[in-house]
Length: 95
Length: 95
Image (cartoon, each protein chain N blue to C red):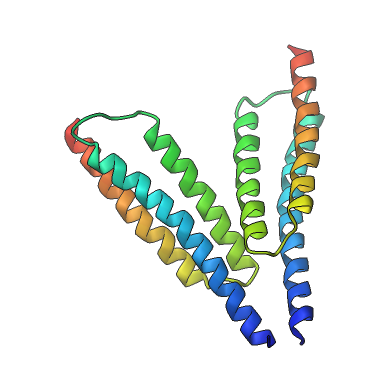
């Protein structure tokens, strides 16, 4: 494998791992959205915050290691942050 | 650069980035150890826990991306955990 192929492979691998972790958070948000009218777990917010922090550290590391562009990293986080904001808005509307 | 040189470079880069982050936590532990007799900040424990979690997520990602061996990753965390245990022991002895 050539150097550029290897780097491309590693970059794709890094992206797919980060996307996997982002999807897990996405899923947590969806579950909480779906349960909005039935029950609320007060720890959910904390779990989501912790997961978001963990993902941001992974992304930061991948960017510093040269495996991911800063732009793509920011996009992954922004998308989740928008979904989180919607969830919190929905939770507040219920109060 | 050959593929194997590139991979070696990336692995070294990953290790040095993680070691950098581990050193920052090490420094936090040292500062708190040095301040043991003068003052204690109740938030220190929480900050250290958060930083340890962040580093563990970075290491986990690096291992999954194939940039770091699981053994080396565990060693970095174990060393910090031992130092943290010493700090908490010293804090408890003071109570």
